[in-house]
Image (cartoon, rainbow, N blue to C red; front, side, top):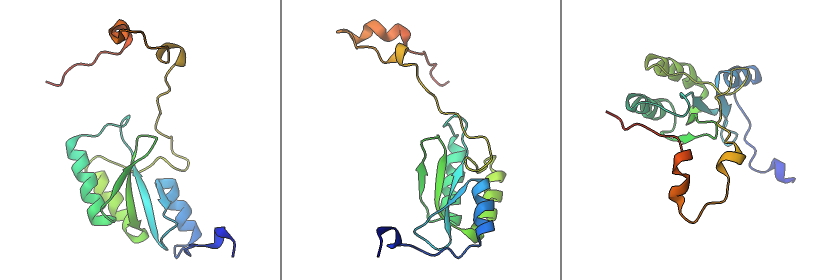
Amino acid sequence: MHISEMNTVVCTVPAEDVARVKGLGCLRDKTTPDCFNCRVLTRNGKITSAESIAIAEAAAKFGKGEVAMTTRQTIEIQGVPYENIDAMRAFLNQHGLDIGGTGPKVRPVVLRLRPDRYLQPVPEDPRAVLHRLPRCEAAP
């Protein structure tokens, strides 16, 4: 037996349905016959506390109760059975959220730092470079 044949789980969802939900932002979890990991879009990696509660509720109600962060600053709801995807999406929409980040949709922007500006040798006194760092305002 070849290593690629080990731990192979046969998908019970028709291929056209797998492709449809991939276009919506849900990737098949290949360790299960019918579960998907669905990516919730964020605004540059930011969500409100109310949105985080809605995502946690969606993960508990429609998935296996787990979320993960992606490198493209989205949140993945893990282990969502195929039959729960549309209901989960409707639930998220009610809270101003949507799934996406895969397929033909526009992908979230990922920041790329300019090496010539930020990756310079650190001086003896780090306070000497503080003027180059972006300033942030404290929340009211």
